[in-house]
Structure formats: C-alpha cells, structure tokens
Image (cartoon, rainbow, N blue to C red):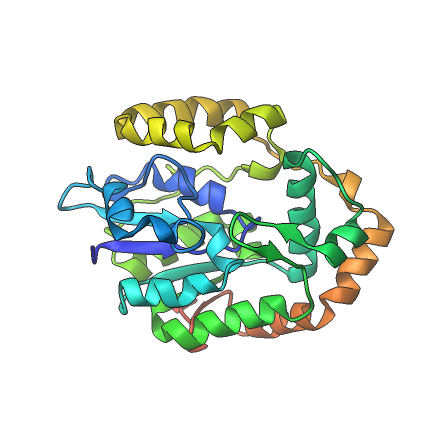
Length: 287
C-alpha cells in the first residue's frame, strides 16, 4: 500500500473541509468516513483491517487517510513511518491558542458533560486512546516530532491560508503528493464546514461512533456512503462560525497564557512562507 498519503491534522484546522473537497477529485479514494484512526486507537486491529478500508480503490487512484487525531496521539508518528518510510504527510497548523479554544468548543458540542475551559485544560480530555491535555509546548513537540521523522516528506500548511485561499493549499497538496491537477477556481468553494458545531443532536454523533454502525458503513458501497455524506454536507454548510460562547475574555486570556510560546513558535515557523516542507524549506514558491 504505497499509494496512500496522510493528512494528520491538526484537529480543528480544516480537515473536514479537505475531506469533502477531496471527495470531488477523480483520482482520490477516501474511506467511508473521515477519521479512521488506524495509527492511533485502531492500531490493534491490524494492518489487514486498514487495507480493507481501501480494498475498492482502483489501481490508478491514490488513497487518502484524513485523521486529525494523529496530531494528538504522538504514537501515530512512528507507526506511520513504519507503515511506509517514504509516505507523504500533511499537517495544517493553526495558531495554538485559537486551536485550544476551538477544540474546547468541539468538546462542548459533543460531550454529555461539560467542564469550564480552565478545568478542561487542567484535567485534560479523554480521547479513545489516551488522556490528552492541552499543555504548554504540546504543539511545539508535535510539530517538531513530525518534522524530525518525515523531513521533506512532510508538508506544513498555515491554517490562515486555508481559510483565505483554500485553492492554494489544495494545489500545494496536489503538487506535493504527485496528484494530477484537478482543483481550479471553478470547482473549489470557499466555505466553512465546521464539524465541531454541526446542528445535529449529540445522540446522532454518539450513534455514529459505535462499532456496529461503523461496521455497517464499511460494508456499504463507497458511492452510497459518499452520496449520504454529500446530502448531510449540504444541510450543514456555513458561511461563518458562531462559537462566541467559548471565546470569553477570560478563556482567551488563559489560552494565550498557556500557549504563548507555542504561538510564537508557529508564527516564526511561517514567517518566511505559509507552505513549508518539514526541513523548513519553502514550498509555496510555485503558487
């Protein structure tokens, strides 16, 4: 399985938009749902389980694994490298303090119990694989490990560019992964698809995460699943996000305080350009 590339996150940095946009690409094959999480909490299911998700992929197609939890569970890094030492990996990097607030908002929309932001940061968030804490230097450590492991096979993209000019990011990913050109101004819609703020009931999100439901979806033809994905997408599109309830002055100040050094690191990382290779060299000069 050499013809797969991975979008490893970050969470809350446009990965849902990328999933639905890459569904349009004629050479790209995507599994039945976005976050298959094999290299994280599904790793014990074995490689054959992972391969089965791509068993309908045609020879001329390229598979994509879009799983933002790979940027939260750092065990994923070596597992991905072991799977294919030459694999191409993409990280969309969001300003850490903004990311923390957005991640908290996702928690509020998907959790049966809620914690104040300060307690959420201190106690952490229980992922399926481990307890994840929004600690100082976490983003620095994440990006550094990905850069050290994948070097020029890593593409780092500034989330702010994805927000303003998504076509540039899509073109960069095409070029970086060797995909044939497809995206143009005529087939890319700059919309916000906010997976953490869907107008769905929490019970629906809960049901869709259950193993029997996931297994059932896995047995359905890919075109059927994508058809229902697109219907759902049309009902959930947003031109803007309304997450003001978590962006209180107190929460903003706390996020800036905790992630002050991480914010500086990301700002300096993209100071010379908004699309970089893992070794720090510019990649956006062709745009």
